[in-house]
Image (cartoon, rainbow, N blue to C red):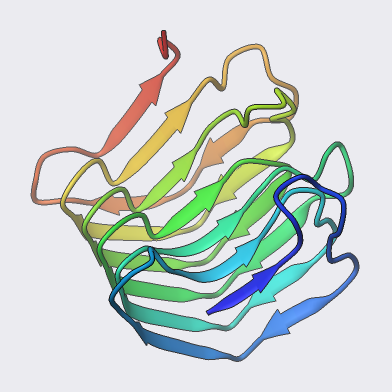
Length: 167
């Protein structure tokens, strides 16, 4: 797929646009992501992409390390073995469609460097996931956290898991 940045934050993408891409058929080993913005990447827009048929997660945005939020908007993600959209840092996740995922539709949590803040997840449609449609870990006592106006339709009966007990 598309991978930018370094896991230790020593290199990153900033003020850029990843737009109108078709990312598909990422199978086999190792575990694949459709689009991955690694730690430190900030103020990027991931918009109008189609990501499907992969053995990993669709779109993942890591911590901005207290930089400006990344924008994940108007993407379609489906038929992945893991999570549709993963959010571990300041982001605006809006108007995406996620379905037929083997894990969670949308997952957000606190990264190892403990800088989860300023996440807004709104106006998304999440359906037909094998696990919880949405899982939000460690959100209490964080600044700027919003989960609002999403459509969650999951025949597993698992809509939203709000988990603050990660011990």
